[in-house]
Length: 374
Image 1 (spheres, rainbow, N blue to C red):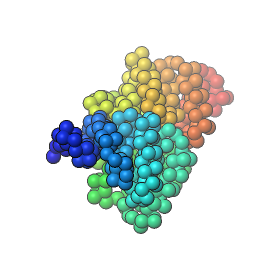
Image 2: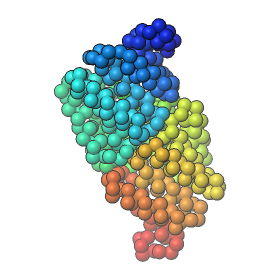
Image 3: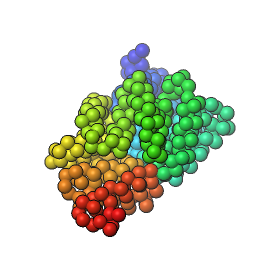
């Protein structure tokens, strides 16, 4: 029940191998309760202690376990696209191949996929999704077929292949089993991720009522599990409400944004803290408080990018542009949309491209450029 205490005593006693095992257990327990900063500290202690153990298969196997867990914790504490999780998962993959441990490749592929997709390296993420599906098929593993369908859906969603994404998500959800909750592959629960992404996919495809049901299911599930999942689901729900309902949803969204900021401040989830500021700023502008809202929106963009994340930046810039439009600054909004358009062509992240064009038309109309707006 207190592996961190045993790790400390074993370290003092010179029992390095036992201490490493207890550091790993302490880190895994911390991850399970969303104490990601504590997890990073414990797992790093374990890696530091490895240097006092003779090199060999046993040491490499222990390092593999530590690197997988550390990559997971770094995704939450540094952000999905930060260098640290990328390095941890790259080392884990090298160890998998060196040790010939195909059974442990699945979690490593998930980590590498997550790192790549949030950097907006979408074609590489799509390739890793295909590799996950092959991994599942080779093992004839129903759980991994569920997981790989979800991640392949994510790649398709952001590339704008929305019909295919929907099929993948529905496949993942139809094969979901509640026992899979115990398998922790990334900071967010696979079920929460599939529901949240499917809700947005259905919204963009025009199935609004179905989309709302899936959004609500994602929030309900997220409140049953640990804090990171709630931050994740709230971030998606805020974006959903902005797209679906516009300014009339601002009072409700403001409460959700404040809840998101409270969770992320307590637990240290930088990516979703950035989203909380972004959405709080948008809500304030929608409520006629643009002077307060714009700095928060810009802070949100800066903080999001500071984690290394490029994913969703085009739609974040659409949010910035909309905020400027509500503040009576359409030219600043058009500048943000020009940057968004450049990013869409660079990364091929096209799921929100239609909204970008719609808003550009609205802003051009507001300054009297009617033929271009049309």
